Amino acid sequence: MVRVAVDALGGDRAPEEVVAGALEAASGDVLPVLYGPAGLDTGGLPLVETTQEIAMDEKPADSVRGKPDSSLVRACRAVGEGEADAVLSAGNTGAMLAAGLLEIRRLHGVMRPAIAVVIPSRRGPSVLIDSGANADARPEHLLQFAHMGAILAEEVLERPKPSVGLLSIGEEPEKGNALTLEAHSLLAASGLPFAGNVESRSLLEGAADVVVTDGFTGNVSLKLLEGTIRSVLDALREEIAATARGKAGGLLIRPAARGLRARLDPDTYGGAYLLGLRGLSVIAHGNSSRTAIANAIRLAARGVHHRVVERLGERIAERVVASARSRGPDDGMR
Image (tube, rainbow, N blue to C red):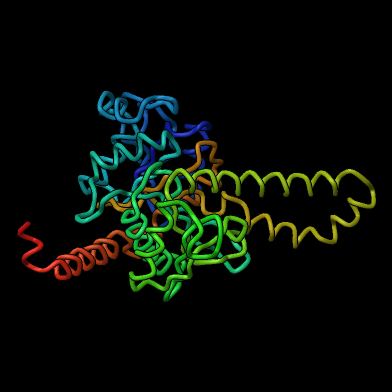
């Protein structure tokens, strides 16, 4: 059974929606353990009592250091100490990153953890990495993000040889800023199935199984995608309901519309993996519904079942050894 430590106070709708989502996700294979205040009604799920809370607007590093008994920090600590297999929070993303680095710690060889989001596309789901952990990044970081995203695509999305694309302003290799130009050269020589540059307009088309970028660009792209999808689906629903003819037609297309919404709705996956830590960490949207929380818990359990962290550690260790060999003994002495 996979034990998922759940921050009951994380998110705009906490704790009610978080508890409801945890109850929905609970099964014979998954046990959500809630971290929150004494007296919290968990519906029968285990509760680890905490005395502090980290708000969405608090400074991440200061809040993590200053509130060691907060629900978010305690949930992360449970993974670091082996009391839980994964952690989930819909709370302060920066605090989740800071608590992950402090309590769970980085895998050996990882330069920077990255947020990997599964996004919908016409060719099936793909991975966008980094989606917000690192506003600034170097080319070698993007190369490592690509390897981490490829592991996720292989293990969770079941893509045997996932293609990797680099988010840029044009498909031509010479297009982009200094970061993307150098990252393009590293990716082309990496041995990964590199598909070249990918434009943002192709994200929903499935231009690559893994799309790599820095955290600032990735977060802007992700929120633009989510906002556009939500606006289009809401506008379609309003148009259908506006006239009698539209309502009649809506009955005919309802099955297809429901399928489309289910495929494009961010709640379908519910959260994103914070990759590069020694334990599995999942970050959910701040306004997550109970459905999103339930799916995020299932996403965490899926990552544990597929040994995502272990596979990442193996792949990164292989790259560290290969890099050391390529430098040679003389370079290592310098």
